Length: 77
Image (cartoon, rainbow, N blue to C red; front, side):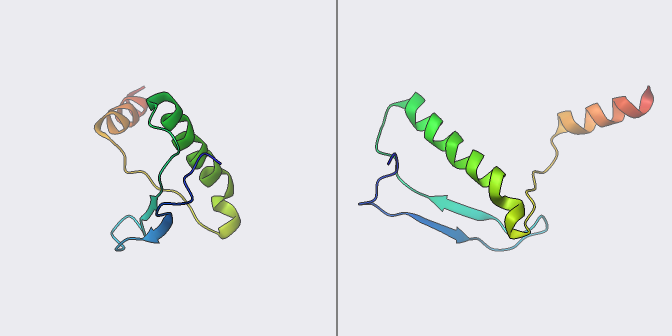
């Protein structure tokens, strides 16, 4: 009910890369209030995180500089 059904709604595969097959979620919310929009976006991602393994898929996020520094620090201890 918080996604507009009278506007474009699609999920599509983008070009595969070194880190896998990216998906694009394209939808419009029924609000322009920032906090409501952020809540809707978070709900969408919560649903994706909860169901992804049922499809035999895994999520990937490339590490950042902070991730690498933290990992290096863990090995020094």
